[in-house]
Amino acid sequence: MKEQHGLVLVQFMDMREYPYEKALARFWARFIDEKFWAIWPAVKKAIVSREREREEAIEETRPHLKTLESGLKERKFVGGESLGFVELAANVIVWLFVAQEVLGLEILTEEKFPTVHEWYQRFADDAVFKECAPPRERLIAYYKALFGASTASK
Image 1 (cartoon, one colour):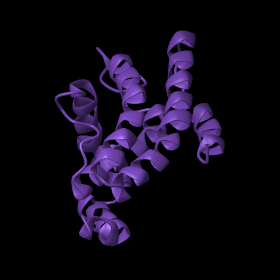
Image 2 (cartoon, rainbow, N blue to C red; image 1 turned 45 degrees about the vertical axis):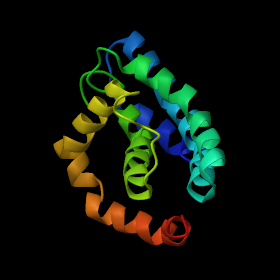
Image 3 (spheres, helix red, strand yellow; image 1 turned 180 degrees about the vertical axis):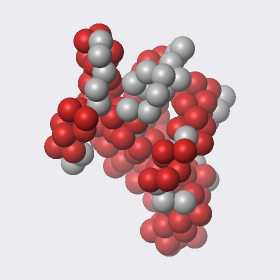
Image 4 (cartoon, rainbow, N blue to C red; image 1 turned 135 degrees about the horizontal axis):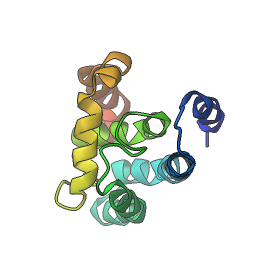
């Protein structure tokens, strides 16, 4: 819940006109903030664990991903049709995509989570996101440096 104070501030900047859309966006931002930041220990465990323990750790993440998958159905972005404060909360998922690629993990597979994959692609291709986020190559280099020792021994 590190990001919670930042999300509260950004909520006021996200000027949705409709109360239902606002409530839905707040729900998803909180869900992502609570559930996806909470799975990082499982992801880290998957990185340093042996095969069986790795699979168990990855399975811990699946219920939250399934919930997100169902929530994204028929929506361009988590918060609606355009980037909003929910996508700011969801940036942790972008990092997860890059981390799994670098580390050879299969957490967010396209076969199991096609809607999340489509969302990720729209998010990563968005001009605003590209302008604000570090280049993908930097993220890859970061994860290689951070987890190099853990992945080299496998």
